[in-house]
Length: 292
Image 1 (cartoon, helix red, strand yellow):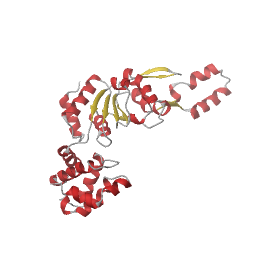
Image 2 (tube, rainbow, N blue to C red):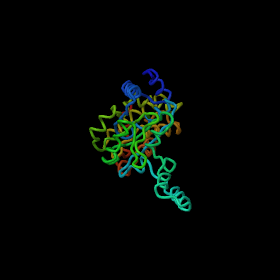
Image 3 (cartoon, one colour):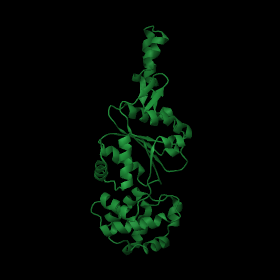
Image 4 (cartoon, one colour):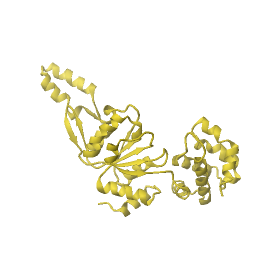
């Protein structure tokens, strides 16, 4: 059984700058073999946690990206209709009856596995990431309940398929809609917010080798100030790292000495025309004044 120290070391090796709460959440989810629901703002590092978990466990990551209108066919399985048709034509020439035909046509051989079925059919434990579950419809959320509670799925033509190995399940949500109580009851819960200034500076230092410590701290402070502005799309950690890499590549060592470059490179942070218009050079200089 994995220990909490091994979880901490595994996250560190994956360059995931963590907290004791994150370590505890991951440890308990692994120990109890229960799904972990990770909620928080977009860009806070929820998806990255699942990726690092797969790396830590030296296993595959199976990812289901949720979206409005996602259904069983795209999440669980589809029948390989072209292959079935070829088999049907071949068997008809042999004069087989429908009962014999259907027995062949609706077997695992003709099943196209989508992420959910692939995860529970894998010969070894994998990490199943159900990303942005809040974007899926409530009907799909209800469909997931059987998988999350019993780690099995039902296919009408084949019956119930139970997990070969119980996958490690991570669900993420940006909180755009309220998830059902039934889903929450089947999961452990952890909230991931944007990192504070010190932790974001540490993330920059870990992810951007060779960057100045003082510059990393200035960037983290600037990002914290930008996130307090009235923006449509608040920059996440990935945007922070892009900006830090850009500034380091320009050999900037002090943001206050390069106000023009700071403002021009904010294309790494601001992803809408409205936000770019809001964060004018004047606003950028005002925020720079707060960076000690």
